[in-house]
Image 1 (cartoon, rainbow, N blue to C red):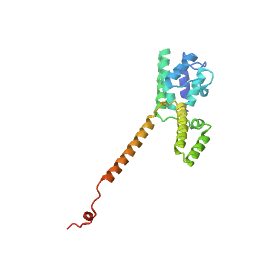
Image 2: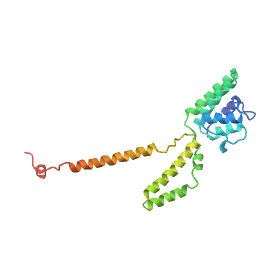
Image 3: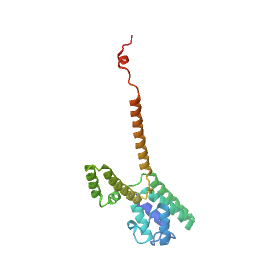
Image 4: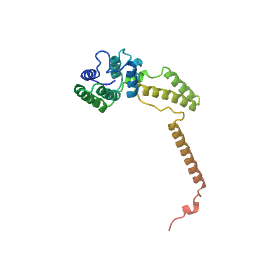
Length: 211
């Protein structure tokens, strides 16, 4: 979660006109679109389901880390300036920018409890299957199961912290590892070939003393 202080929240709520449950001039649809474009989250997600737009924004502040909240505050502040370009708004926007800078400057607040909630329900079953496969001499099958479980977990972790992951049919990392393995095998083969092909030194010359 972010570490916004109560005073900072009041400043932001005043700027974003949240007193009546609204957020600036957003409708439900445009608010959803704005959050998706700004930080890639859906305010209709169960984590942020607080009813009104203002309550959903408060839930976003509560649930997401500092770096994400900082980005959102900056984008909302820019929109507030467009909606109401008055001297009062300009002064409040400056305060919002200071809040944004503070949040962005520090390390993100990692919600460790979120990491525990995204562990798949069948995690223990996966690990049991991995161990069983390895013990039965089916290492490749065990590694494949472990890979599937870990990728699923990392994808859920990325989603939870608004991190984008690239889904491809062919993993560059896997290809790179396979290439490295092939290169290493080839190198060893060449070394062995050269070693076997090299003439052995003569025993007599090796043992001959140098006068």
